[in-house]
Amino acid sequence: MNVPDDLLYTESHEWIKREGDNVRVGITDHAQSELTDVVYVELPKMDGQANAKEAIAVVESVKAASDIYAPVKGTVVEVNKALEADPGLINREPYGQGWIFILKIENADELKNLKNAAAYKKQIG
Amino acid sequence: MSEAAQRRTPLYNEHVRLGAKIVPFAGWLMPVQYTGIVDEHQAVRSKVGIFDISHMGQLIVEGSGAREWLNTMLTNNIDKLDVGTGQYTFLLNERSGIIDDLIVYRIDEQKFLLVVNAARTDEDFAWLQEHLKEGRSPDRPGGWKAAAPCKLENRSAEFGGVAIQGPRIAELFHTLFGDDVDLPPRNHIVDLPFDGTNVSVARTGYTGEDGVEVFFRTADAVIFWNAALGKGKPFGIKPCGLGARDTLRLEMCYPLNGSDLAPERNPIEAGLGFFVDLSKPNFIGRHVLLQTKENGPREKLVPFRMKEKGPPPRPHYAVFQNGERIGEVTSGTLSPSLNWGVGMAYVSTSHAKIGAQIDIEIRGQKFPATIEKKPLYKKS
Image (cartoon, rainbow over all chains, first blue to last red; front, side, top):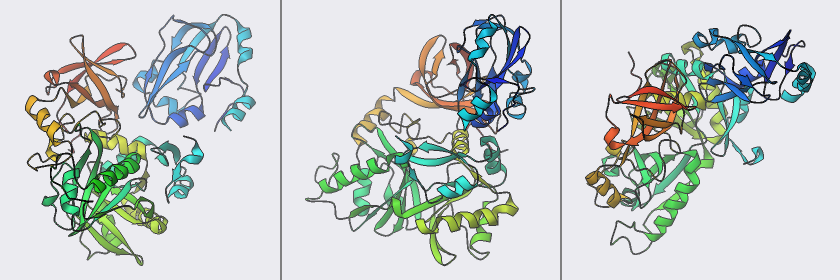
Protein backbone atom coordinates (compact mmCIF):
# COMPACT_ATOMS: atom_id res chain seq x y z
CA MET A 1 0.00 0.00 0.00
CA ASN A 2 1.16 3.47 -0.83
CA VAL A 3 1.73 5.64 2.28
CA PRO A 4 3.52 8.82 1.22
CA ASP A 5 6.10 10.06 3.72
CA ASP A 6 5.16 13.73 3.42
CA LEU A 7 1.57 13.33 4.68
CA LEU A 8 -0.04 12.99 8.11
CA TYR A 9 -2.65 10.36 8.92
CA THR A 10 -5.55 9.58 11.24
CA GLU A 11 -6.52 6.30 12.82
CA SER A 12 -9.71 6.50 10.76
CA HIS A 13 -7.66 6.40 7.52
CA GLU A 14 -7.76 10.04 6.38
CA TRP A 15 -4.59 11.60 5.01
CA ILE A 16 -3.75 15.25 5.73
CA LYS A 17 -1.56 17.59 3.76
CA ARG A 18 -0.57 20.88 5.32
CA GLU A 19 -1.01 23.84 2.92
CA GLY A 20 -0.21 26.97 4.93
CA ASP A 21 -3.19 27.73 7.20
CA ASN A 22 -5.19 24.99 5.52
CA VAL A 23 -5.12 21.22 5.39
CA ARG A 24 -6.17 19.13 2.42
CA VAL A 25 -7.88 15.85 3.38
CA GLY A 26 -8.59 12.60 1.59
CA ILE A 27 -8.66 8.90 2.38
CA THR A 28 -5.63 6.67 2.16
CA ASP A 29 -4.77 4.12 -0.48
CA HIS A 30 -5.39 1.43 2.15
CA ALA A 31 -8.84 2.87 2.92
CA GLN A 32 -9.92 3.06 -0.72
CA SER A 33 -8.72 -0.49 -1.27
CA GLU A 34 -10.73 -1.70 1.74
CA LEU A 35 -13.84 0.24 0.70
CA THR A 36 -13.51 -0.88 -2.92
CA ASP A 37 -15.45 0.74 -5.77
CA VAL A 38 -16.50 4.16 -4.48
CA VAL A 39 -19.87 5.01 -6.03
CA TYR A 40 -20.95 8.12 -4.17
CA VAL A 41 -19.39 10.88 -2.09
CA GLU A 42 -21.37 13.19 0.14
CA LEU A 43 -19.15 16.24 0.39
CA PRO A 44 -18.97 18.41 3.53
CA LYS A 45 -20.97 21.65 3.62
CA MET A 46 -18.98 24.67 2.51
CA ASP A 47 -18.13 27.01 5.42
CA GLY A 48 -19.21 24.26 7.82
CA GLN A 49 -17.29 24.06 11.07
CA ALA A 50 -16.13 20.78 12.49
CA ASN A 51 -14.28 19.54 15.52
CA ALA A 52 -11.55 16.96 15.29
CA LYS A 53 -13.02 13.45 14.81
CA GLU A 54 -16.38 14.82 13.77
CA ALA A 55 -17.97 13.05 10.80
CA ILE A 56 -18.35 15.59 7.98
CA ALA A 57 -18.47 13.58 4.76
CA VAL A 58 -19.57 10.15 3.59
CA VAL A 59 -17.89 7.86 1.09
CA GLU A 60 -20.10 5.06 -0.22
CA SER A 61 -18.98 1.90 -1.95
CA VAL A 62 -21.28 -0.68 -3.51
CA LYS A 63 -21.42 -2.46 -0.16
CA ALA A 64 -21.48 0.23 2.51
CA ALA A 65 -21.44 3.88 3.56
CA SER A 66 -18.42 5.10 5.57
CA ASP A 67 -18.07 8.35 7.49
CA ILE A 68 -15.11 10.62 6.84
CA TYR A 69 -13.89 12.65 9.81
CA ALA A 70 -12.36 16.07 10.23
CA PRO A 71 -8.79 15.34 11.33
CA VAL A 72 -8.53 18.60 13.34
CA LYS A 73 -10.85 21.46 14.24
CA GLY A 74 -11.51 23.78 11.31
CA THR A 75 -13.80 25.33 8.73
CA VAL A 76 -14.50 23.81 5.31
CA VAL A 77 -13.18 26.23 2.69
CA GLU A 78 -13.14 23.99 -0.36
CA VAL A 79 -14.71 20.69 -1.45
CA ASN A 80 -13.75 18.50 -4.38
CA LYS A 81 -16.76 18.92 -6.69
CA ALA A 82 -15.13 16.58 -9.24
CA LEU A 83 -16.05 13.67 -6.97
CA GLU A 84 -19.75 14.27 -7.60
CA ALA A 85 -19.35 13.31 -11.24
CA ASP A 86 -16.52 10.84 -10.78
CA PRO A 87 -16.40 9.29 -7.28
CA GLY A 88 -14.01 6.63 -8.63
CA LEU A 89 -11.24 9.26 -8.46
CA ILE A 90 -10.90 8.21 -4.83
CA ASN A 91 -9.97 4.70 -5.96
CA ARG A 92 -7.73 5.78 -8.81
CA GLU A 93 -5.91 8.70 -7.23
CA PRO A 94 -6.50 8.64 -3.47
CA TYR A 95 -3.67 11.16 -2.81
CA GLY A 96 -4.21 13.24 -5.94
CA GLN A 97 -7.43 14.12 -7.79
CA GLY A 98 -9.33 12.05 -5.21
CA TRP A 99 -8.89 14.57 -2.35
CA ILE A 100 -12.16 15.33 -0.57
CA PHE A 101 -12.06 18.70 1.22
CA ILE A 102 -9.86 21.52 2.51
CA LEU A 103 -10.13 22.77 6.09
CA LYS A 104 -8.92 26.10 7.36
CA ILE A 105 -7.43 25.13 10.69
CA GLU A 106 -7.52 27.10 13.92
CA ASN A 107 -4.65 25.62 15.82
CA ALA A 108 -1.70 24.10 13.98
CA ASP A 109 -0.64 22.43 17.23
CA GLU A 110 -3.50 19.97 16.79
CA LEU A 111 -1.62 18.48 13.86
CA LYS A 112 0.79 17.04 16.39
CA ASN A 113 -1.94 14.60 17.41
CA LEU A 114 -1.89 12.99 13.97
CA LYS A 115 0.19 10.03 12.87
CA ASN A 116 3.23 10.24 10.64
CA ALA A 117 3.68 7.80 7.75
CA ALA A 118 5.66 5.31 9.83
CA ALA A 119 3.02 5.19 12.57
CA TYR A 120 0.21 4.80 10.04
CA LYS A 121 2.07 2.03 8.22
CA LYS A 122 2.39 0.24 11.53
CA GLN A 123 -1.35 0.64 12.16
CA ILE A 124 -2.40 -0.94 8.87
CA GLY A 125 0.25 -3.68 9.17
CA MET B 1 -17.90 -14.46 16.88
CA SER B 2 -14.12 -14.57 16.86
CA GLU B 3 -12.24 -15.38 13.68
CA ALA B 4 -11.02 -18.64 15.20
CA ALA B 5 -14.60 -19.84 15.52
CA GLN B 6 -15.39 -19.11 11.87
CA ARG B 7 -15.45 -22.08 9.54
CA ARG B 8 -13.46 -22.28 6.32
CA THR B 9 -14.77 -23.83 3.14
CA PRO B 10 -12.56 -26.37 1.32
CA LEU B 11 -11.75 -23.52 -1.11
CA TYR B 12 -10.56 -21.06 1.54
CA ASN B 13 -6.88 -21.38 0.64
CA GLU B 14 -7.69 -20.83 -3.03
CA HIS B 15 -9.48 -17.58 -2.18
CA VAL B 16 -6.51 -16.37 -0.17
CA ARG B 17 -4.13 -17.36 -2.96
CA LEU B 18 -6.24 -15.36 -5.44
CA GLY B 19 -6.00 -12.31 -3.19
CA ALA B 20 -9.63 -12.27 -2.09
CA LYS B 21 -10.82 -9.98 0.63
CA ILE B 22 -12.16 -12.37 3.27
CA VAL B 23 -15.07 -11.51 5.57
CA PRO B 24 -17.03 -13.42 8.18
CA PHE B 25 -20.44 -14.42 6.83
CA ALA B 26 -22.97 -16.72 8.52
CA GLY B 27 -20.25 -18.34 10.60
CA TRP B 28 -17.91 -18.81 7.65
CA LEU B 29 -14.87 -16.98 6.34
CA MET B 30 -15.93 -16.13 2.81
CA PRO B 31 -14.50 -14.09 -0.09
CA VAL B 32 -16.46 -10.85 -0.44
CA GLN B 33 -14.50 -9.89 -3.55
CA TYR B 34 -11.34 -10.63 -5.51
CA THR B 35 -10.74 -7.82 -8.00
CA GLY B 36 -13.82 -5.72 -7.21
CA ILE B 37 -17.57 -6.09 -6.88
CA VAL B 38 -18.40 -4.14 -10.04
CA ASP B 39 -15.80 -6.00 -12.10
CA GLU B 40 -17.03 -9.40 -10.92
CA HIS B 41 -20.66 -8.39 -11.36
CA GLN B 42 -19.99 -7.42 -14.99
CA ALA B 43 -18.13 -10.67 -15.63
CA VAL B 44 -21.25 -12.62 -14.66
CA ARG B 45 -23.55 -10.41 -16.75
CA SER B 46 -21.35 -10.48 -19.84
CA LYS B 47 -19.19 -13.64 -19.63
CA VAL B 48 -19.06 -16.08 -16.75
CA GLY B 49 -18.19 -16.07 -13.04
CA ILE B 50 -17.62 -18.73 -10.40
CA PHE B 51 -18.70 -18.45 -6.75
CA ASP B 52 -17.84 -20.64 -3.79
CA ILE B 53 -21.13 -21.76 -2.26
CA SER B 54 -19.63 -24.48 -0.08
CA HIS B 55 -20.99 -22.73 3.00
CA MET B 56 -24.55 -23.62 1.97
CA GLY B 57 -26.10 -26.56 3.77
CA GLN B 58 -27.11 -29.93 2.31
CA LEU B 59 -29.79 -31.93 4.09
CA ILE B 60 -30.96 -35.31 2.89
CA VAL B 61 -34.42 -36.72 3.59
CA GLU B 62 -34.85 -40.35 2.56
CA GLY B 63 -37.38 -43.10 3.06
CA SER B 64 -40.86 -44.33 2.23
CA GLY B 65 -42.46 -41.36 4.02
CA ALA B 66 -40.03 -38.71 2.77
CA ARG B 67 -42.28 -37.23 0.11
CA GLU B 68 -45.41 -37.03 2.22
CA TRP B 69 -43.62 -35.76 5.31
CA LEU B 70 -41.62 -33.09 3.45
CA ASN B 71 -44.85 -31.88 1.89
CA THR B 72 -46.07 -31.07 5.42
CA MET B 73 -42.85 -29.16 6.16
CA LEU B 74 -42.37 -27.15 2.94
CA THR B 75 -44.70 -24.72 1.15
CA ASN B 76 -44.30 -25.72 -2.48
CA ASN B 77 -45.79 -28.98 -3.74
CA ILE B 78 -43.20 -31.71 -3.84
CA ASP B 79 -45.57 -33.94 -5.82
CA LYS B 80 -44.77 -31.75 -8.82
CA LEU B 81 -41.17 -32.98 -8.76
CA ASP B 82 -40.01 -35.76 -11.03
CA VAL B 83 -36.80 -37.52 -10.11
CA GLY B 84 -33.92 -35.24 -11.08
CA THR B 85 -35.76 -31.95 -10.70
CA GLY B 86 -35.92 -29.28 -8.01
CA GLN B 87 -38.09 -26.39 -6.85
CA TYR B 88 -37.75 -23.24 -4.79
CA THR B 89 -39.69 -23.51 -1.55
CA PHE B 90 -40.00 -22.26 2.04
CA LEU B 91 -39.65 -23.72 5.49
CA LEU B 92 -42.13 -21.86 7.72
CA ASN B 93 -42.82 -21.65 11.42
CA GLU B 94 -46.36 -22.06 12.80
CA ARG B 95 -46.99 -18.34 12.41
CA SER B 96 -46.15 -18.73 8.69
CA GLY B 97 -42.90 -16.78 9.21
CA ILE B 98 -39.95 -17.77 7.04
CA ILE B 99 -37.31 -19.91 8.72
CA ASP B 100 -35.53 -20.48 5.43
CA ASP B 101 -35.89 -20.37 1.67
CA LEU B 102 -34.30 -23.27 -0.13
CA ILE B 103 -34.25 -25.52 -3.15
CA VAL B 104 -35.46 -29.09 -2.73
CA TYR B 105 -34.34 -31.63 -5.32
CA ARG B 106 -35.88 -35.05 -5.80
CA ILE B 107 -32.70 -37.03 -6.39
CA ASP B 108 -34.43 -40.40 -6.23
CA GLU B 109 -37.99 -41.65 -5.92
CA GLN B 110 -37.78 -41.56 -2.11
CA LYS B 111 -34.73 -39.32 -1.62
CA PHE B 112 -34.64 -35.53 -1.43
CA LEU B 113 -31.78 -33.04 -1.23
CA LEU B 114 -32.44 -29.70 0.47
CA VAL B 115 -29.92 -26.95 -0.33
CA VAL B 116 -30.32 -24.39 2.44
CA ASN B 117 -28.80 -21.10 3.57
CA ALA B 118 -25.51 -21.32 5.49
CA ALA B 119 -26.78 -19.20 8.37
CA ARG B 120 -29.85 -21.39 8.82
CA THR B 121 -28.47 -24.90 8.25
CA ASP B 122 -28.34 -25.91 11.91
CA GLU B 123 -31.67 -24.29 12.69
CA ASP B 124 -33.36 -25.94 9.70
CA PHE B 125 -31.93 -29.30 10.69
CA ALA B 126 -33.05 -28.97 14.31
CA TRP B 127 -36.53 -27.84 13.24
CA LEU B 128 -36.93 -30.71 10.80
CA GLN B 129 -35.56 -33.25 13.25
CA GLU B 130 -37.97 -32.17 15.95
CA HIS B 131 -40.94 -32.47 13.62
CA LEU B 132 -39.70 -35.73 12.16
CA LYS B 133 -39.77 -37.28 15.63
CA GLU B 134 -43.28 -36.04 16.21
CA GLY B 135 -44.31 -37.59 12.94
CA ARG B 136 -46.85 -34.88 12.30
CA SER B 137 -47.16 -31.19 11.72
CA PRO B 138 -49.60 -28.98 13.64
CA ASP B 139 -51.66 -28.84 10.47
CA ARG B 140 -51.88 -32.60 10.20
CA PRO B 141 -54.47 -33.87 12.66
CA GLY B 142 -53.84 -37.61 12.21
CA GLY B 143 -50.24 -37.93 11.27
CA TRP B 144 -48.06 -40.94 11.79
CA LYS B 145 -48.36 -42.68 15.10
CA ALA B 146 -44.63 -42.48 15.65
CA ALA B 147 -41.78 -40.79 13.81
CA ALA B 148 -42.37 -40.22 10.11
CA PRO B 149 -40.97 -43.18 8.14
CA CYS B 150 -37.93 -41.45 6.74
CA LYS B 151 -34.53 -40.33 7.92
CA LEU B 152 -32.96 -36.89 7.97
CA GLU B 153 -29.25 -36.26 7.63
CA ASN B 154 -27.15 -33.12 7.68
CA ARG B 155 -24.53 -33.79 5.00
CA SER B 156 -23.23 -30.22 4.81
CA ALA B 157 -19.73 -31.03 6.01
CA GLU B 158 -19.28 -33.67 3.29
CA PHE B 159 -20.03 -31.39 0.36
CA GLY B 160 -18.63 -28.32 -1.22
CA GLY B 161 -20.15 -26.42 -4.08
CA VAL B 162 -19.73 -23.67 -6.64
CA ALA B 163 -22.14 -21.63 -8.70
CA ILE B 164 -20.99 -20.98 -12.27
CA GLN B 165 -23.09 -18.23 -13.78
CA GLY B 166 -23.11 -16.18 -16.94
CA PRO B 167 -23.98 -16.27 -20.65
CA ARG B 168 -20.93 -18.38 -21.51
CA ILE B 169 -21.86 -21.22 -19.14
CA ALA B 170 -22.88 -23.63 -21.90
CA GLU B 171 -19.47 -23.38 -23.59
CA LEU B 172 -17.68 -23.83 -20.27
CA PHE B 173 -19.93 -26.72 -19.28
CA HIS B 174 -19.06 -28.63 -22.44
CA THR B 175 -15.37 -27.92 -22.02
CA LEU B 176 -15.55 -29.31 -18.47
CA PHE B 177 -17.84 -32.30 -19.01
CA GLY B 178 -17.54 -33.12 -22.69
CA ASP B 179 -19.22 -32.04 -25.91
CA ASP B 180 -21.56 -35.02 -25.90
CA VAL B 181 -22.88 -34.32 -22.39
CA ASP B 182 -26.12 -32.34 -22.25
CA LEU B 183 -26.50 -29.38 -19.96
CA PRO B 184 -29.39 -30.32 -17.63
CA PRO B 185 -32.60 -28.36 -18.36
CA ARG B 186 -33.62 -25.54 -16.00
CA ASN B 187 -34.24 -26.77 -12.42
CA HIS B 188 -32.91 -30.23 -13.24
CA ILE B 189 -30.06 -31.93 -11.41
CA VAL B 190 -27.79 -34.64 -12.81
CA ASP B 191 -24.81 -36.63 -11.57
CA LEU B 192 -21.88 -36.39 -13.95
CA PRO B 193 -18.47 -38.01 -13.95
CA PHE B 194 -15.66 -35.55 -13.57
CA ASP B 195 -11.95 -36.36 -13.40
CA GLY B 196 -12.42 -39.77 -11.76
CA THR B 197 -15.11 -38.62 -9.37
CA ASN B 198 -18.80 -37.72 -9.53
CA VAL B 199 -20.34 -34.28 -9.16
CA SER B 200 -23.96 -33.12 -9.11
CA VAL B 201 -24.85 -30.37 -11.55
CA ALA B 202 -28.07 -28.37 -11.13
CA ARG B 203 -29.25 -25.81 -13.68
CA THR B 204 -30.09 -23.02 -11.29
CA GLY B 205 -28.62 -19.90 -9.75
CA TYR B 206 -29.05 -16.66 -7.88
CA THR B 207 -27.87 -14.15 -10.46
CA GLY B 208 -30.50 -13.96 -13.21
CA GLU B 209 -28.00 -15.34 -15.69
CA ASP B 210 -27.98 -18.81 -17.15
CA GLY B 211 -25.89 -21.04 -14.95
CA VAL B 212 -25.32 -24.10 -12.85
CA GLU B 213 -24.61 -25.00 -9.27
CA VAL B 214 -22.18 -27.88 -8.89
CA PHE B 215 -21.88 -29.93 -5.71
CA PHE B 216 -18.94 -32.23 -5.02
CA ARG B 217 -17.26 -34.05 -2.19
CA THR B 218 -15.18 -31.75 -0.01
CA ALA B 219 -11.99 -33.54 -1.08
CA ASP B 220 -12.71 -32.75 -4.75
CA ALA B 221 -13.40 -29.05 -4.23
CA VAL B 222 -9.97 -27.63 -5.09
CA ILE B 223 -9.61 -29.80 -8.19
CA PHE B 224 -12.99 -28.76 -9.53
CA TRP B 225 -12.54 -25.06 -8.70
CA ASN B 226 -9.17 -24.91 -10.45
CA ALA B 227 -10.40 -26.89 -13.43
CA ALA B 228 -13.31 -24.49 -13.89
CA LEU B 229 -11.06 -21.45 -13.54
CA GLY B 230 -8.47 -22.92 -15.92
CA LYS B 231 -10.90 -24.10 -18.58
CA GLY B 232 -13.00 -20.99 -18.15
CA LYS B 233 -10.11 -18.70 -19.06
CA PRO B 234 -10.94 -18.53 -22.79
CA PHE B 235 -14.48 -17.52 -21.83
CA GLY B 236 -13.32 -14.74 -19.51
CA ILE B 237 -14.20 -16.46 -16.23
CA LYS B 238 -13.66 -14.57 -12.99
CA PRO B 239 -13.83 -15.78 -9.41
CA CYS B 240 -16.64 -13.80 -7.78
CA GLY B 241 -17.35 -13.04 -4.14
CA LEU B 242 -20.35 -12.47 -1.96
CA GLY B 243 -20.38 -8.78 -2.89
CA ALA B 244 -21.20 -9.45 -6.54
CA ARG B 245 -23.53 -12.29 -5.54
CA ASP B 246 -25.54 -9.73 -3.58
CA THR B 247 -25.70 -7.05 -6.29
CA LEU B 248 -26.58 -9.64 -8.95
CA ARG B 249 -29.43 -11.15 -6.94
CA LEU B 250 -30.77 -7.75 -5.93
CA GLU B 251 -31.02 -6.58 -9.55
CA MET B 252 -33.24 -9.64 -10.11
CA CYS B 253 -35.18 -9.02 -6.85
CA TYR B 254 -34.25 -12.44 -5.52
CA PRO B 255 -34.72 -12.24 -1.76
CA LEU B 256 -31.89 -12.69 0.75
CA ASN B 257 -32.87 -14.52 3.92
CA GLY B 258 -31.97 -12.44 6.95
CA SER B 259 -32.52 -9.21 4.98
CA ASP B 260 -35.68 -9.50 2.86
CA LEU B 261 -36.97 -12.64 4.54
CA ALA B 262 -37.30 -13.19 8.29
CA PRO B 263 -39.25 -15.26 10.82
CA GLU B 264 -41.67 -12.30 11.11
CA ARG B 265 -42.33 -12.22 7.36
CA ASN B 266 -44.34 -14.69 5.33
CA PRO B 267 -43.99 -15.62 1.63
CA ILE B 268 -47.14 -13.71 0.62
CA GLU B 269 -45.84 -10.47 2.13
CA ALA B 270 -42.54 -11.16 0.37
CA GLY B 271 -44.39 -11.41 -2.95
CA LEU B 272 -43.42 -15.07 -3.30
CA GLY B 273 -46.83 -16.71 -3.00
CA PHE B 274 -46.08 -18.51 -6.27
CA PHE B 275 -43.90 -20.90 -4.27
CA VAL B 276 -46.66 -21.73 -1.80
CA ASP B 277 -49.27 -24.32 -2.70
CA LEU B 278 -52.25 -23.51 -0.50
CA SER B 279 -54.20 -26.33 -2.15
CA LYS B 280 -52.04 -28.79 -0.23
CA PRO B 281 -54.16 -30.04 2.70
CA ASN B 282 -51.52 -29.43 5.35
CA PHE B 283 -48.15 -27.89 5.87
CA ILE B 284 -46.74 -25.86 8.72
CA GLY B 285 -47.86 -22.26 8.48
CA ARG B 286 -50.78 -22.95 6.11
CA HIS B 287 -53.54 -21.70 8.43
CA VAL B 288 -51.96 -18.30 8.93
CA LEU B 289 -51.10 -18.01 5.24
CA LEU B 290 -54.74 -18.64 4.33
CA GLN B 291 -55.71 -15.75 6.59
CA THR B 292 -53.06 -13.52 5.04
CA LYS B 293 -54.33 -14.42 1.63
CA GLU B 294 -57.94 -13.70 2.59
CA ASN B 295 -57.31 -10.41 4.40
CA GLY B 296 -54.37 -9.31 2.28
CA PRO B 297 -50.91 -8.78 3.80
CA ARG B 298 -50.36 -5.71 5.96
CA GLU B 299 -47.09 -4.97 4.20
CA LYS B 300 -45.50 -6.00 0.93
CA LEU B 301 -41.95 -6.32 -0.29
CA VAL B 302 -41.53 -4.03 -3.30
CA PRO B 303 -38.59 -3.21 -5.56
CA PHE B 304 -37.79 0.46 -6.05
CA ARG B 305 -35.46 2.62 -8.07
CA MET B 306 -34.11 6.03 -7.09
CA LYS B 307 -35.30 8.88 -9.29
CA GLU B 308 -32.08 10.83 -9.24
CA LYS B 309 -28.41 10.02 -9.15
CA GLY B 310 -27.43 10.22 -5.51
CA PRO B 311 -26.50 8.14 -2.51
CA PRO B 312 -27.43 4.47 -2.85
CA PRO B 313 -30.24 3.16 -0.63
CA ARG B 314 -29.25 0.82 2.20
CA PRO B 315 -30.98 -1.64 4.52
CA HIS B 316 -32.97 -0.01 7.36
CA TYR B 317 -33.43 3.36 5.67
CA ALA B 318 -36.97 4.62 6.28
CA VAL B 319 -39.47 4.85 3.41
CA PHE B 320 -41.97 7.72 3.20
CA GLN B 321 -44.88 8.74 1.01
CA ASN B 322 -46.25 12.26 1.19
CA GLY B 323 -44.42 12.72 4.48
CA GLU B 324 -45.91 9.61 6.07
CA ARG B 325 -43.63 6.79 7.07
CA ILE B 326 -44.78 3.69 5.18
CA GLY B 327 -41.95 1.20 5.54
CA GLU B 328 -38.30 0.29 5.61
CA VAL B 329 -35.62 -0.72 3.11
CA THR B 330 -34.39 -4.32 3.49
CA SER B 331 -31.87 -4.43 0.62
CA GLY B 332 -30.24 -1.61 -1.27
CA THR B 333 -27.19 -0.89 -3.34
CA LEU B 334 -25.90 0.86 -6.37
CA SER B 335 -26.81 -1.51 -9.17
CA PRO B 336 -23.62 -2.08 -11.18
CA SER B 337 -25.62 -2.96 -14.33
CA LEU B 338 -27.77 0.17 -14.18
CA ASN B 339 -25.22 2.36 -12.41
CA TRP B 340 -28.16 3.52 -10.33
CA GLY B 341 -29.48 3.20 -6.78
CA VAL B 342 -32.01 0.36 -6.36
CA GLY B 343 -33.44 -1.65 -3.51
CA MET B 344 -36.31 -3.51 -1.96
CA ALA B 345 -38.47 -2.38 0.94
CA TYR B 346 -41.43 -3.55 2.95
CA VAL B 347 -44.14 -0.90 2.67
CA SER B 348 -47.75 -0.90 3.83
CA THR B 349 -49.89 -2.63 1.21
CA SER B 350 -52.09 0.37 0.47
CA HIS B 351 -48.97 2.22 -0.73
CA ALA B 352 -47.37 -0.70 -2.55
CA LYS B 353 -48.45 0.19 -6.08
CA ILE B 354 -46.18 -0.11 -9.08
CA GLY B 355 -45.24 3.36 -10.24
CA ALA B 356 -45.98 4.96 -6.87
CA GLN B 357 -43.66 7.75 -5.81
CA ILE B 358 -41.90 7.23 -2.50
CA ASP B 359 -39.04 8.87 -0.61
CA ILE B 360 -36.07 7.14 0.94
CA GLU B 361 -34.61 8.91 3.94
CA ILE B 362 -30.85 8.93 3.76
CA ARG B 363 -28.97 10.64 6.61
CA GLY B 364 -31.93 12.83 7.43
CA GLN B 365 -32.66 13.88 3.85
CA LYS B 366 -35.42 12.49 1.65
CA PHE B 367 -34.55 11.24 -1.84
CA PRO B 368 -37.35 10.40 -4.32
CA ALA B 369 -37.78 6.89 -5.68
CA THR B 370 -40.37 4.92 -7.66
CA ILE B 371 -41.87 1.53 -6.86
CA GLU B 372 -41.00 -0.74 -9.76
CA LYS B 373 -41.96 -4.11 -11.21
CA LYS B 374 -39.69 -7.12 -10.72
CA PRO B 375 -36.97 -7.49 -11.85
CA LEU B 376 -35.08 -4.22 -11.48
CA TYR B 377 -32.72 -5.22 -14.25
CA LYS B 378 -33.72 -6.78 -17.56
CA LYS B 379 -31.28 -8.05 -20.11
CA SER B 380 -31.49 -5.94 -23.23
